[in-house]
Every structure is written in C-alpha cells, then in structure tokens.
Amino acid sequence: MDSMIDVLLRRSENEIILAETLIRLSEDKAAKDFMNVPRAMTFYSGVISHSYYAIFYAAKAILLKNGIKTTAPEIHKKTYEAFKKTFVDTGILDIELLKIYKTIAIRAEDLLGIFEKEKSKRGRFTYATISQANKEPAEDSLRNAKIFTTNIIKITEKK
Image 1 (cartoon, one colour):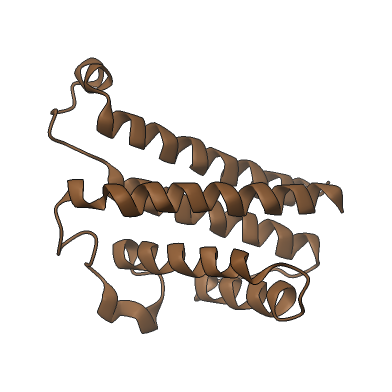
Image 2: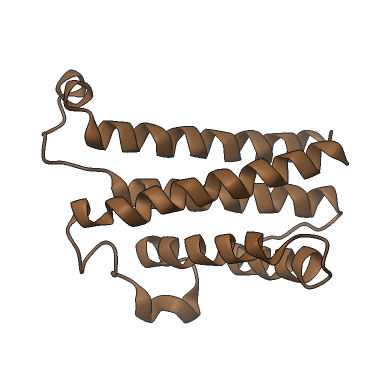
C-alpha cells in the first residue's frame, strides 16, 4: 500500500483511540485522580473533534487510493465533496457513510469552524451547552466514526 495512504489510515485509527481515551477520562474517577484532572471536567467536545478527524483521514486515504488528492485551501470541504462525488453519487459506497461523514463534520464545524458556510451553527456544542451535555453527541460521533473508518479501512486495504 502507498505509504501516504497507510499514514492516513493509521492517523484515522489513532484519532479513534484518542477519542475513546477521552471518553474514558471524562467518566473514570480513578483516571482523573491519576492524571490530576478535576472530577467535574469532561472532554466530550474533544471526542467529537477527534471522531471527525478519524473520518477525515479515512476519507482522504480512500480518495488518495483512487488517485484523488485534496489540498488547502478549504481542504475539509474539498475532501467531503470529493468523497461524495467519487464514492456516494456513483453508488460505489452506501449513502449511510456519507450521512455519518456529514453529521460528524457539522458537529466538528460547530467546534472547529471547518466549513465557512456553516459558521452560523458554531457554538451549539461548545458555547450553548455545558460540556457534560455533549456526552450523547460525543458517544454518537465516536460510534459513527468507528463504523465509517472500519468500512473505509477494509475497502482501502482490499483494493
């Protein structure tokens, strides 16, 4: 496999592991004590962000495997659009993967400002709610990121 594709897939896996770790740290009192983290502190916003990046790197990997390289500016938007056009609009991949990608991208945009046209939604999960209220969307983002990346890795490594 191309080394850059492999790097992107490994980065995707690393983002999943980091998101899982942040969920555990948010919920495990002993881990918080060990790490000197205040018990009331959570990292659910980070889970959403890292779940998004897992999907982003997996999408970049499968695009690169098919000869498509996305670059700045607007790399996130270009990657999403290329993924949709190349794999979903053509019927190569299930539209459910695109729905997962879009849902997490919007959540991540709320946190990171990734898509310019979506700026009006910013703050829904960081400013408008307390961090504990992010638990459900964080768990959903992580679950979806696992589904997305697992499928992309299988497809990419099979080709």
